[in-house]
Length: 358
Picture 1: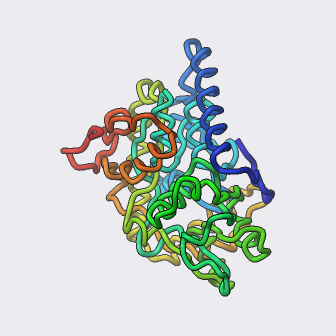
Picture 2 (picture 1 turned 30 degrees about the vertical axis):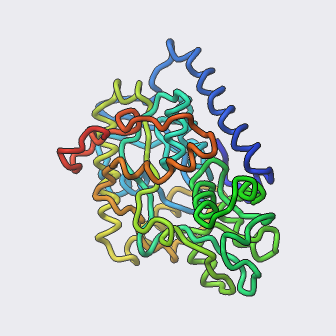
């Protein structure tokens, strides 16, 4: 688990690092399996309230944090922050290996972990793309880059390897007609979201994957424009899910149900509440928690929840977007079945026809 950081994490070629990341995940899961027999599910229950450990995001308010502040967990679930992350794959790996009790990542990362044997299951969507909130792949005004075809030999800043940014870049390059060898020559540079705009303006990278409040802040500074956006690629879509370990689900089904219900309500609260009120709530939460190296400057640029589905309900289509990337890059030999990936069983707002995965 990482603490807030403003330093580069790595600058390695994408193919080699992706394989190393997957191997490290599998090794960590194997090590966990050896000790799992005598281990508890991690979540602690007292007086009917279950404490769930989790990782947050620097300068941001997560949906579970918002749900707790709005009182949606009251008397059922309590959150315990154990540190921050800048990577969805790392976040769900921490949940899979018992360092935390839940984590969130994009659907392709969930599919890779399940394929590798991780004992996890997705329970609701927590991010995606709508008309206001989406990832854009930005270049400086005046850049010679005009389309994805121009990215061969160039550097693209992403928040992590093995995450949605990597899948987006691959899908765009594939759609542009680039060969496998050409795609491998596009270098992905891992940078925290807070550092990507600066790296772009300093010409340390050629493209920056900007989203949410960081995207809006960069646009307010001016001098950049998108090479392409997720909206161009996918339209409205659900991008990632919160997952729990299967043993925790079995031991604490009521806590999981309360979590899913509360986070789903928080999603709908964000959709129904005026932007200025949502931002004010975020500022209050961040100032009250008094974590180090945080500020609320970028909160003023928050626009929407970015979750198209109602109450975070999951469907098969939420995973199908990443199938070609997973299979073409050898990340998985076979995409896991929907029943192995997710369930809507704990979402009281899901349509009855899709309570289970599939």
